[in-house]
Length: 285
Length: 316
View (spheres, rainbow over the protein chains, first blue to last red):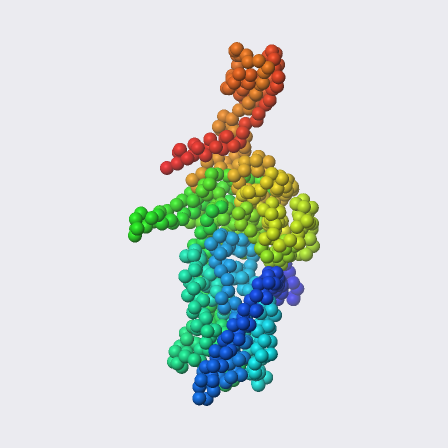
């Protein structure tokens, strides 16, 4: 009674710990891969900082032009924080990402990804989290410090804003990964994904709140975008959480909406990957 | 005990051929057209065929990368595509024209990452890596990012990466493609070492028949998706009547000589013999002005070229 024999199924915990170690090792490799490109990291942080100044002056001019001094319901300090945190988050979520997975599909290198005992999406996701963590340290911090140094920024006033912002940012990273994977996975069917990639770049920039805060749009349109598309969850939601744009309940609701989109899109990724593997063609040797 | 069993394995691809500006015609290409193959544990199998014959497609179906259109295949007791995750722990794969290493990371980091991905105990990993380091001379470039390695160095890294989890079957798809003579020899010596232990089954596709002669006892030739020869290299020679050649160089041309001369070019005579050349050589010993005698083994490349030509002519 109570003895363990050889046929007893392995406990879930025994499997979870090695799985977590594998995931963490792949995440670490993602971090190391990006840390090898130091010049590109510096150039990226510099560019984001320069564009931070441009966007700040444009949005402050918009706010100055209104009778209330508010633009889209944001005051000057909130706009400054929105811009500078956004310039950092842009690299963390990798809104523009890369076509690495599509390139691997096109060249057939994806075959190597399929020959490992880890689901390809889990492997890509773990590596992307490593990339995101590297971006937090190298691409998020410089623009945020620049904003703090040169402008009056809005600092959160409620204690739960910081953890909610961290959670919302983590969800944004997952959401953006899922979207980028789906865009890249088009290569299983089309080979050349330049068209979908351009559509993604424009769509994510406009609807994600990068080019302008979505609050500038008429409310019905804004609500439709927020509920019917995952894009606002990639930038607009974490930034609105950070600047405390809405009441606490509403902020929690927006983060919950992110969760829904994350679950939906990651499921979608799994289905797409499964279908793609069934029709996979790898040319030339 | 069989580690690979394939019955009626087929793979069809649909290609669209342009007929006019607006019209595209669908065409079915039978890349693999009913391959039957059984490979026993510890065998070293050479799998050859002309370009487009279906070698790589067969390997991709056996490793679970491609879904067969029809037929059955089992590798290490698993059905490759649905059970690919389990199968990957039991097999190693090297694609000569692709890389399984991380481009931006040093080899050492790639190997360490593979240890975690395949969940290999640290001691096993260390011992296998030590063996590969010594046999493949990896130490000089272990800390260099993969993108900066030469093709020969990368291929040595690829072989190590494929073996670190102790696979039962090693699939090698053109592992010596593009390599210089020294690197090819290093790869062949290493694979010989792997093969002689008898616990790893090797399936090797190549266009370099020296790989096959050096490594494989059994040769499977595929063309137009079908197996056209399955047996030893000697059996292939016997099938095509390959014979040894005795080449005789003389100081002066001879006017006539009785014997099975296949070529006579002034001071050089070439004879063909079955089996032992001793009798012919003994007879030639009495020739006046004899300068040299050489015995040439049948050339596998000639035989395989004849085989490819025959199957192309027979193809529908």
